[in-house]
Structure formats: C-alpha cells, structure tokens
Image (tube, rainbow, N blue to C red; front, side, top):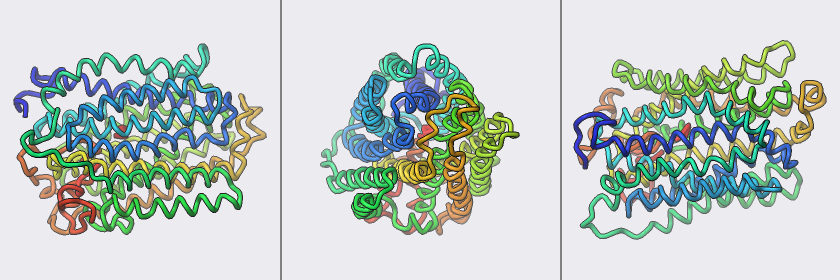
Length: 521
C-alpha cells in the first residue's frame, strides 16, 4: 500500500493517476467518436439492418472478458489483464477500421469488446489496490470527469474526420494514442498493484466453473442476438438454444434474487443493468435517427449528445457531496426518472415541427440522472469490497451491465428491423428520410423508457435488511482497512454482504457479493 497522504495528484500517485485517467479519457473518446461514425460506417457497408449488432457484439464478448479479468486480477494482479485488454481493444479497432463487409466490422467490435472487458475490471482493481479509501472517491470523480471533454470534442472531431477523410480513420487513428498513457501508468502499476494481494499465499487456480458460465453467457447472448435480427420461424431454434445456455449461466454468476429485486446486493446489481441497458440501447439509435430522419450531418448528430458528458460528471459530483449521503436511494430513483423521461422525449424529433436540439436538452438531463445512478451504485459496492476479492466481485456487476446492454440492444434491434428500420440507410437528407420508417425508432425508444422507469422502483430496494439507514451503509469499513474497490466494480459487492442472498457460486459471502465503467462505462 502506498503512502495515503496527499491527493490523487500528490507525488506517490501522480503518474498512476494521470496514466489510468488518460486511459479512461481515450476510452471515452473512442465511445463518443465511434458512436458518431457508426451510422456512416453501417450505411457504406450496407449493414444498417445489422446496426444494433455493431454495439451488442462489443458487449457480448466483453461479458466473458470481465469474468476472465476478475479471475486473472485476483490471482496474479491487474497488470496482465489491463495490458492484454488494451492490446485487444486496439486490434479490434484496426479490424473494424479496415473491414470491407459488415460482418467483419462486427467481428472487430467483438474483439474490441473482449479487450474492453479485460480493461475495465483491471482498472477498478488497480484503484482498490493502489489508493487508500479516502482517495477513491476522488479518482472515481476523475474517471467521470474524463468523459466531459471527449463528449464535447469527440463528436466534432469524429464528424469532421468522417466527412473529410472517411469513417475508417476514426477507428484506425485511436490505437496509437493509447501508447503514451499506458507507458506512463505501467511502472506505477507494477510498483503499487502488481501481483496477488498476499504474495506469500499460494496462487489459487482459476475457477473453471465461472469461466464456463461466462462463456455460456456470451454464447447464449450471441444466439439470442442472431435470432432477434433474423426474424424467421427457423430463428426460434437459435433463440431456444441461446436461452437454454444463457439462463443457467446468469443464475450461476449473479447474486440470488437479482431478477426479483431482492433487497441489498441483488437490487444493486439489477439496477446497474436496468440503468445501463436502457440508456445505452436508446442512445445507440439517437445518431442514426438524427442522420436518417432529420438529415443532420454525422458531426451535428454527434454534437447533439455532447452536453451529456458534462451533465453526467455533474450528476456524479452531486451524489458525492457528504450532505447527499442520507438521501442516496432517493437520488438513485430520481436519476432513473430523469433517464426514463429523456428516452421518452428523444423520439419527439420525429415530429417535423419539433427542433432537433430537443434531443440534446433531453439527453443532458438523462446523463445527469445516469451520473447520479452509476456513481451511487459504485460507491456502495466500493466500500464493501475486500481488495483480494475486487476482481471477482466487480465482474458480477459488470456482467449485469454488459448483459443488459446485449439483451436490450438485441430486443431494440429486432423491433427496429421488424418495422423496416433496415431501409433507412438510403437517406442522406430530410427529403430522403421521408420515405423511411419513423415507427422503427419509436419501437426502440418507448420500451427502453419503460425499462428505465422500472429502475426507479428498483432504486428503492438498495438498502440491505441489516442496514438501518444509508449512512450506516456508507460507514462500513473494509476488512483490511483500505475500504472500497473501484467505481462500477464495487457497486454490487458490499450490498451482497448487507443482504442475506449471497451468490451460491462464491467461495465466501464477501467474494461474490462485490462486483461492477460506463466507463460510461
């Protein structure tokens, strides 16, 4: 453990903080930039009907990456999964950027997702190992703030590059930028967070059962996505196989009671999935809707979401104020109401008289709500996660996040394709868009708004039965005195301890009681 005096930019932590925050910054830039370029890429590759796959393919493989990273980091330290994940992330970007067909583009996104799953859990474990508890909120806030600048300049840069150089350069240009922050952070990671927590203890073998379950989740989710996009009677077969593989895997990896919103950790895990899945599934279709239905350029479509980065960080800041601690459940429920309202407002721009900037305003409020929800769940998990269990515990929360993204994107993509959404690729302007199918977008946004609204109710069930109030939950110390784990990685861990429904698969109650970046994570 490093010296716990000073702040995250004091001498003991400066290089590490700058390095890992820069990695998050580039991940944020990639997310905003790729989202802006995606409509053009799908159209040029004649793959608008498979548009949702470009996003859900990423999340599908990231599910396996998260579990593998948690196992790897707990046993040998976070350096290995972090470095491997960054390499795969860059390789996936290059593969997508050079693709000549939509299936190859989606394959690149899948490779990128595997790397992203390794990276996000690795980063959270680094925070849990390298920073004392009183600094973790600050580094988490820095992660959230890292989305502000990319959210503003990412769409502008990406749109400009897409319009003048082509969408491929958005993908190809990002990998080289990762080298500098990685080189800065690696020495500090080796010094403060490498190797197992207890170097003298024997290294446990990988939990093969959990690895198999993770593979089952990715395979099952992939089959369900395929069935959702290929709307024929024959698709019932892969859908049935996917469900048969997916359901037991999910039940084995997530806390008992998650899908009935049992109080404590199960509800925290469920809420993370509900919030992330509904918001990301809806957001993925916003640029496509603005480009094809309102005739906006990729730059302007991306910029419509730019304010969200700032309001997301503001929401994260608001929940971090000490005076807000007793009201954390209320903040979470209020945040989910804002998310639902923003998703519900987005398709209003399909009405000709409604100006396009309405989406930007609505999304700003939605991102403010997401900032409160994601950060609050992360704080709860962090304070209840032992450092040696940070990887496994964070994986459970991340699985909920990623799986909900996959399933809700698949459902939204199926509805979009069923109502003729695949024909919108021909339009380049308002006149061309008039012949397409606005109802396809409505079929995506309205169900996602309903899911988000359900999350407001789940937010009332975050406190475990043994926690008399939220202030008491916040004051629970970690087993080794170091406190929490990482941002989204911690959200589910400690809540499991507070509830009496710890996962069956965990070696002990604390181990799998903990787990979850959007990275806007």
